[in-house]
Image 1 (cartoon, rainbow, N blue to C red):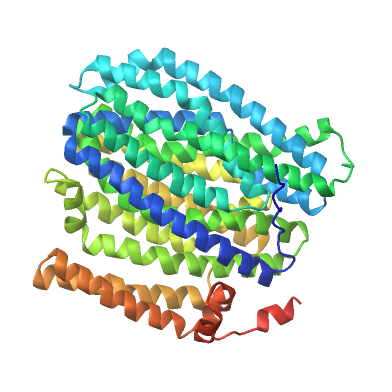
Image 2 (cartoon, rainbow, N blue to C red):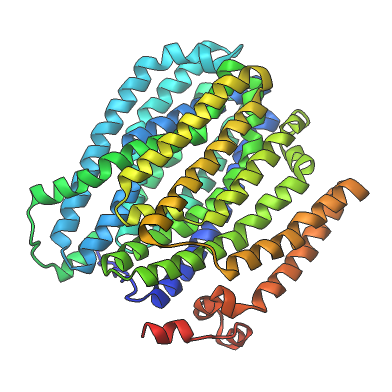
Length: 528
């Protein structure tokens, strides 16, 4: 087997921005494919499966994803922090030890979580199934339980490839490969008229395929890194202690995060009905679309921040933090604001019974607008070693979410769930923002951030609302409006390349197009 070349992490914030621009763009393209695939899965199920069955299916897969979050033990962030740290120092033996400890623990935890799900399946089925055939729901939950250790190890393997400096497996295997395969397997099951049990199996199968491909890719990266092996100054026991002291708080925080994302669906199914859970799931897909954009940048950002902070380059880390905040806003705010203005039209994608989710879309879109302006603040906190503070923040947000859900869902239904989640999103971003500003003296707020905010409101906030309330919503007029606004928005962004550090993207363009982005080398000169 030919060894893969291990990508190197940049030694300066300017180099990090270039690498984040390249890797983030690849991840963003993959996130776009993943977002379309996610919409396709939901659209196929909601349009071809009875609403009651669709709600049970979404609730069951939410239980599965919570089980995976428990099994992963925070491995994604831990590997992003420790692997680059060891590899920068060429301590590949320590990196191997860290990876081995991580994979073994995730496998064991996955098996235990799968067993717990097998035992709890019959009791969960009546809760998430409503009037659906409980036997089919039970079989579906049991089938998903078998895939819990597989999916947990798969996610960990993909995270490890990022830790070794390669973003391609995240973009190609996870974002594109697994997502597209999931659409195909679910569509085949739906068209074949398969019951819910087989629908659940079809949805989970791509995790197994992804694990095979991801493991092969990771093995190549590990072997390539070992070419430049140096003895580790600390032993296996010390690496293990170092890993777990950071990872245990992160493991609990990760559980809180996935509960924030999925508990609402289960609670709506239990406290109201699977039918309303199906509508709520469809409405929240627009939030997930924007989150995929942020995650695409954060996955690339984490190892670079880890290295800059390890070198005590706080000024450079803050610069990277600020620029990536502006980049994330520039892509995600248009999605959120368009969702607010065109909510009724967008919900029609899922069928005639989903218009009642409009207020859910609006509430969550506005909350995520707030989260985007705070930037990848939790990533900064984690890469600075603040896994315990991150745990506190996520736990506080989860408490807010669950308390509001229990109080509001019985009377307000899915709107109550949206209020709870929106409040939790604000808490989860404002708390780490205060900590990063107070302890690391970093802030995401710059002139670029406020300029992007104003520009997106003018281009994507006001025009859709004007179209909706003065002319009415039609697909053709909405499409034309978004296309025209997007063209004007892109031109405005390109007019200020210095403000947004767009020169970091220049190397990705054909040589004859690079003059379109004015190269301002001030930052690079400062850190050369």
